[in-house]
Amino acid sequence: MILVLNCGSSSIKFALYPAAVAALPRQPSWAGRVQGIGGPAPELRATGQGAEPVTLDATHPTTAALGLILARVETHLEGRPLAAVAHRVVHGGGQYFAPVRVTQRVIDDLRRLIPLAPLHQPFPLKAMAILMDRQPRLPQIACFDTAFHRSLPMVEQLLPLPWSAWQNGLRRYGFHGLSYEYMSHALPERHGALADGRVIVAHLGSGASLCAMKGRESIATTMGFSALDGLMMGTRTGALDPGALLYLMEVEGLSLDEVGQMLYRQSGLLGVSGLSDEPRVVVQHEDDPGEAGQRARLALTLYVRRIVAEVGALMTALQGLDLLVFTAGVGENCAFIRSRVCAGLAFLGVALDRVANDANAAVISTPGSPIRVAVEPTNEEWITARHAQDLLA
Image (cartoon, rainbow, N blue to C red; front, side, top):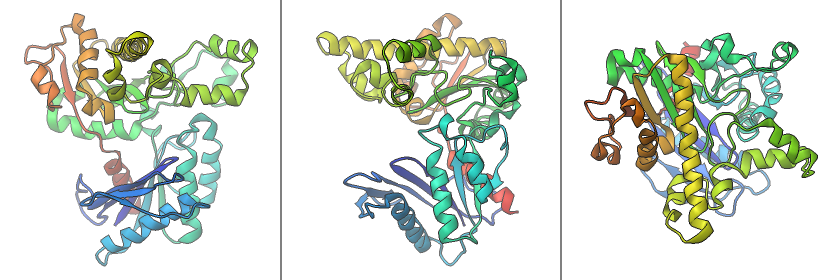
């Protein structure tokens, strides 16, 4: 069996897949998450059961959570060995463009990339180190969100900085690649030849980005050097005038750490609305009186406008658009966000089927819409397990 781990600051998602099969099933044999790690009330949620409160060592909560997962996994192996643990890693930098077996050198290399994705990068590396110490013979495999964007043309990777920056590795890498790679498999199954045409996938979750795909390869994307770029997100700014950062540091006197906290954790929907980083919460306050309602409306308007603007920018790279796909937590489940984005694209002829959209149907555009609009659940765990299976072969 292959165990897939997606480790964050307060949660660890896990999924268990059979290794020795010709066609890896899309759905795991068992899956779930331990959430609330480091908090007062951690719990485990898994396939076939509700929330189960658990007790974790308060001194080493991540280590305890991993131990809990491994112990539970043992009961679901049904006599089969654990062949490998596969990790989702956000950033592979300029060195790792394909899944790799984890060694201490790999961990050390990836630690140097923590400043580029501080909300994500440290946690799988911590899990790798813990597992390497506890089970040194167990193969571990790192799969990178940046790898799918290796196909970006150089002009899409280049930053308008002095050439020495490019030589030193400052470039646009792109993220959410495991999700987009899954789309490259799933979209042809549902949309046939249209999936090989001009496609934009909108991965909208707490982090968010768009990817322009042609021939099911990435040719442009909104996230760049770090996971801050592009779209407005739950707590992250997205693209921002760098002069604003200079002002915050030079005039307002914010330290580098304070600016980092603002950009990653205090901005986006949460920062503008003052309410939440979750669109479904913010929308409930749009009709509130006074400043609260105004800020809620402004936050969602800006959130949607940034998506619409970036769709337009990516269309110039594609020279048109055949298929627009929404995925991830917000993209898959927030019909009102999809509706507002498509209303912003109505000048292109985009027309939604309201009933289909409200039902989160696979196709939510009308038959006459010149651009097909779709909803496709992502499956990063399956892609990660598939890479692990290939490396084990």
